[in-house]
Image 1 (tube, rainbow, N blue to C red):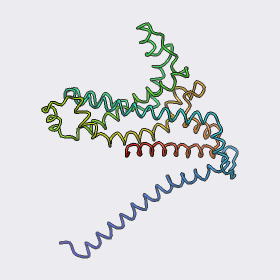
Image 2: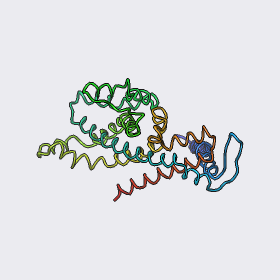
Image 3: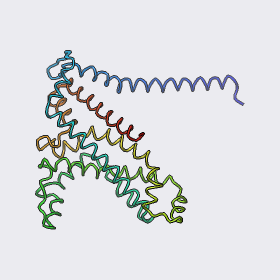
Image 4: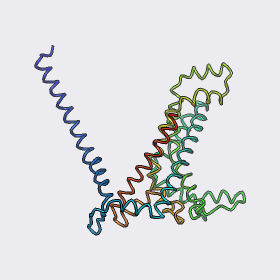
Amino acid sequence: MISRQRKKSIRSGQKMMVYIVATALILFYGIFVFFPMIYALVGSFFNWNIARGTFTFNGLDNYISIFSAPKFRAGIINSVIFSVIATILRCFLGMVIAVMIYFSSQKLKEFYRTAFFLPIVISMVAASYVWKWFFDAQNGIFNWLLSVIGVSGPNWLNDSSFALPAIIIMTVWKDVGFAVVLYLAGISQVSPAIYEAAKVDGATKPQIFRHIMLPLLGAVTTFLLITSIIGYIQSFDQFFVMTEGGPGTSSYVMGLYLYETAFKSYDFGKASAVSFVMFFVILILTLLNSKKKNA
């Protein structure tokens, strides 16, 4: 048996370890998360330009300046349009594909699951360069396929009507696999006996989906909606690689404005203001989604 002194020593050591781990976490988040956030928030009210070495208080001038900039207003609109459409398509297609995979033969399930998940492991930059070639007006695969059936393809990335839809298509292709895996996991949580009982009772596959699967996938859908909006509002890589916001401002998003303000103009005060506007846009869209789901 362990002596009382030994037990006391063990408990003391455990408490010490808890204190050490808790202190390390507090220091980590304090130094690398909360301090930069607070510093950026304060900086958004200053004329903070590292190239000129200025850091003078200017109140709300940074916020007034960015909202009066046509490129930033275009960036907000395009970011919201991109985020909403890409999120809806990701969730809808992910659910449809997951249901189709679930009802497919057992031999093909693993193949389909792997095939749809593969794009997730590819970096966004690499995928963007590949799809930039796909959409190339002269040598791209999409216009070649259209030419085979006698259709003249558009100048995808250099046409203001097609640039943003093209990036949405690429992004959904890249991210839909994650939604498929989550929906498959949600569907698989239900005992197969329930589906078999429904079939015995004469339920068709659409009826099984509507009355059994769909209600159980609400939590997965909510998770995907929130995380997708948060991620897509901050999108930068695919826009920078494929169009750089053009033509004009047809595919210009807030991430590009933030990049140009911070790393081309070195105006970190204005860039900080942009980042907090992005934060509030994300917050509003997330709250609207949560309110709609709870209604």
